[in-house]
Length: 203
Length: 197
Image (tube, chains in turn brown, yellow):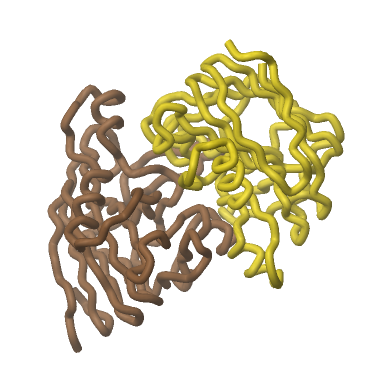
């Protein structure tokens, strides 16, 4: 029962990963209330990536849940959600980025998911042209009625996890979100563990 | 300022053009029930473009309304909705593309909004661009309370229009959606008219 990758990504930082078709990607919120921005690319063609707008169309839903197959910008299933302790994820808002902190919160230089995702992908040694929209695991962006959305803390508890099966060979990155100015991570970024394995692991 | 211009966009095709900051862009659904996929890029840096996720978090809404501005991926206003008499649109779905038609059982080539964008931008001299999720004007996205949705026939009649204003110098692309297999374009793709002033 092989483990191919096992890393703890510190809160507010990023990490890269890769997985072959059939392998399981387990992402654990170690301390709870932590969102993780997640991107995935097809190893054979990095212009094909996990795409939230295409997932919505394929699933005919703005939410994702266990059993769903998540598709690429070329409408091919890349990942399947095989287990999910939380059930609340977001595919509608962007990765936080330098502008978010410098212009909107007056904190230039703040750590951010966009830079973390670039760093994680760079670790894999693959060149990509642009960073796609992330799937924000455990991110709690409720639709509060009349098309308005809210930003609140994740409901995840320590040890909660999501398990994704790679349906093709993939690489990608995870960023346990550094947002500590407004709700999103309980105002305290904390670490996430990412394991790639052949079989489910109770990590 | 540029002269006023008018573009006739034949059914199933696209157009791309530049506008000054402050330009008014009016899109007319000539025969009714015709969606227009809409993209905007900052003229001086095409890697900055109208971004659905950045607009949603900027407005804290799933769909902008009259008076609201769409934001770029650098969180700057690029397009504002000035008048929107038929405010039934889609801002959550990707544009149709060759893979979508393959999925729907199409054999061989079928026009698509993504290809219309790419061709129109190349023809206008902008080369290859990324295809972000567009503002799907008049695509009738009906959201159910449980988060599921369906795409219904557009709510527009002949002559209905939307008026937008550019908030920065921009390159605009518009596709008269060629979808003729689902209800998106009322099963009958038709022409659009675009006026720029």
